[in-house]
Length: 192
Image 1 (cartoon, rainbow, N blue to C red):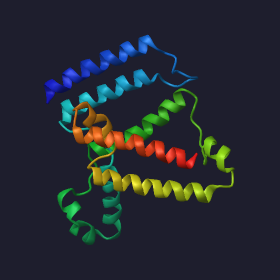
Image 2: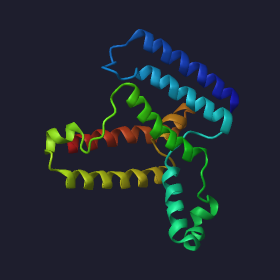
Image 3: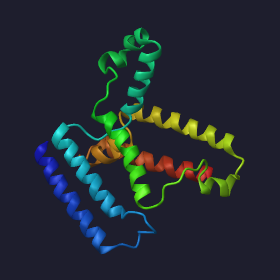
Image 4: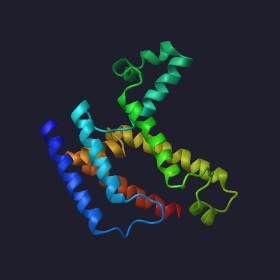
């Protein structure tokens, strides 16, 4: 595993650096280069494989948070559930990964002066108007439920399959990744 990680690190970093040097036309405003961000993600995946021998993933974060809430409200019931018998809720590296991703994105937005607190995305307002909170909330909640269900059904989320699994050339991860994109294209066409 550690040999693959080192090879993948060198390969991803080399390709991303060459691509960034070859084409900078995708950079707009203060946005970071997608090639540089991709190189950093590749480094993250390789370091994660090297140090934890685990893939990068985020979908278990929600189950962990649900377990924390369950333990606070009904600890006996929560700990009798099969999932929590096998994986008791605890702060682990996956939990920290998601928290760090949230804070990291906030830091990146602040660094580039792009941080803003807004309720509805501008694309949504342009299409549905400023008074469409109920529709936006309903679709966001439904989309979140579908994503959580899909992540549990697929055995991982976009970061687990799309980044770590694809880097390992996993057939199930590539299949999931292709389905993520197809689903995203269909959803965006239906909504916008």
